[in-house]
Amino acid sequence: MKNKLFYCLIFFFGLIDFCKSQPVPSPQENIPFLVTFSKDADKAWGDDDFVQTFFVSIPKERTESFYIRVFDPEVGGKYDESKTGFNSRTKFSVYGGKLCFTDKDAIKTEPTGNYKSGILLKTKTFGSDLDTDDKWYTFGPFNPAEGELVPELGGLIFKIIIEGMEGNDGNLYKLFVSSQSTDNLKVEGANSFTYEYTFRTHDKVGSVSHIYPFITSDVISIKINSFDFDDDGKIRIVSASKKGEMVKTSYDNNWTVSEHKIDKEEINTSIDVQFIKTVSKINNNVVVYITNQYGTAIPFFTAPIGGIPSYKYKMMIKKK
Image 1 (cartoon, rainbow, N blue to C red):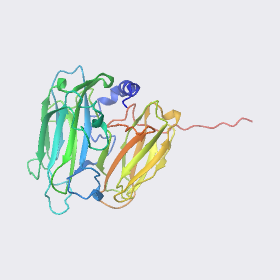
Image 2 (image 1 turned 135 degrees about the vertical axis):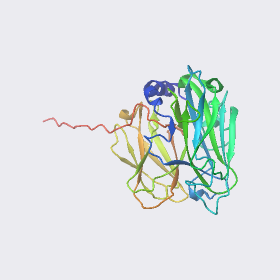
Image 3 (image 1 turned 60 degrees about the horizontal axis):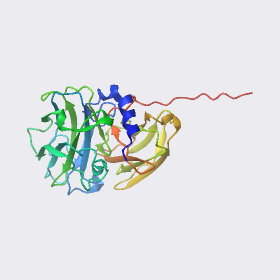
Image 4 (image 1 turned 90 degrees about the horizontal axis):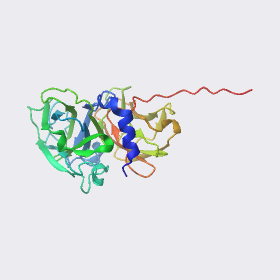
């Protein structure tokens, strides 16, 4: 169920943040790479379904073209994860048009049904390719009018689907929504978000990555679902009312669900779900999604709506 109040709050509180959310992952998230494995991979390597979806919102007033740039889209180079020697291909596809976002299957955490809804605008499949290893590849130009107009989000929505095709290797990459084809220059007022994240954690002990779901007024509890965290460290929540509430973590090749009550101080704010590296291991990948008490997935915005949340200390005064 899409909540109109949610969209209004997102637009109102997030207008300034939208201008800062061009890289995916964003600097605020401190996530090294997005990860998509090919379909013959073992899920225990850290990808539950071999598909990742992101949405981009472009201001409806914009008439100039924009571009979606991908860093290191190929599979087989400097950053990618080989299992038996690189043999994989990854498909990147950009969709717009009617039902690109508003089809109910588009925002599910599993790639089933009509999740490829909308009009296919651009697609390209990458194998092992030195020309795009450790380099940017540009999709576009895109006319903002090609997106699906969602007035509640204040813009035109485009969808990016990344699919692991044949093979069993992991593709590590980043995205950028740009106003230029040859450089990463922000699109004023643009935003990006997803409903399920598959990403690489840091290798360095002590590093902290973040995701920032926005809590609307109808949410009274959330469930944080994580897959294959490999007991790599700790997960905790920091918010206006939580100083560091611990989250149950998943082990190798399993899902763990951690339920948390939402306090009144957290309503209409972002919360900070932190992934804290405490174990000296490398190449760990994790999948995470969050649902409310109705089982509806909550989107993560690459820049936290309303700013990075922080705990608000309360001083208790005892009456004599």
